[in-house]
Image (cartoon, rainbow, N blue to C red; front, side):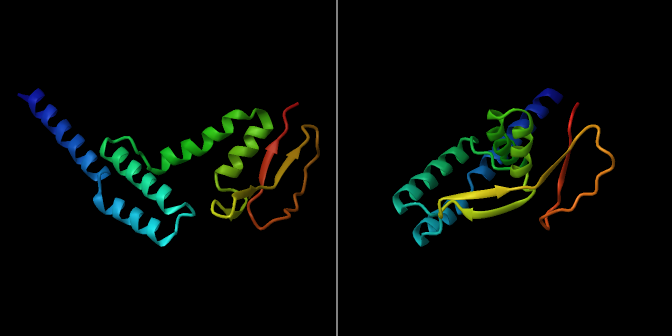
Length: 140
């Protein structure tokens, strides 16, 4: 009896999750953004993307929670190693400055990184930006 109740509860939860992902108002908002030209894409390409996103949401294949989006961003850094990878992660974690747009040809991200030699005496850091400075200790 308890197993049947748990199974029914799981099924109800799954149906609710799919129903939330299939939110028709989201698709309508996407279509309106396409028609207004807010996306930087051609209307035809934008409407196709909106349809594809709606279909993926219905199937539970479109996950846009913040942790998934962060994971997707950080995967871009997997192509780098060492300090280059650390710098990439810093920029994509929203530290530093950001300028530009996708519509304008790209987003440019920059961050100031200070690398302190392992045998250095205490160092006073004078940031060149208003943004937080990332301090990276250098391994010997």
